[in-house]
Image (tube, rainbow, N blue to C red; front, top):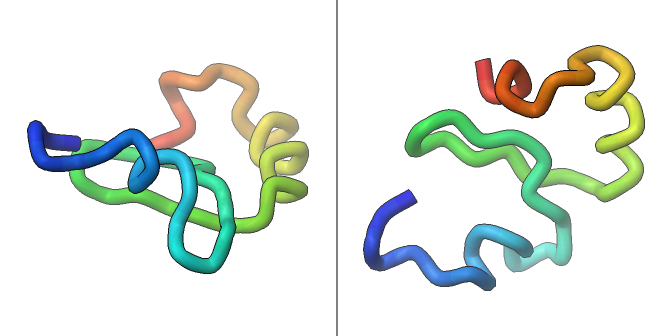
Length: 50
């Protein structure tokens, strides 16, 4: 994100959800179980933030 972001901020949000998708400054957090569906819809990591 930027030089002020910490590793903890990028991995977990306060509710314990995981970082699922990111696109520049936008981050989407959710339950880790959602990653399975995201991987099925968008197999290539570079396309997931679009």
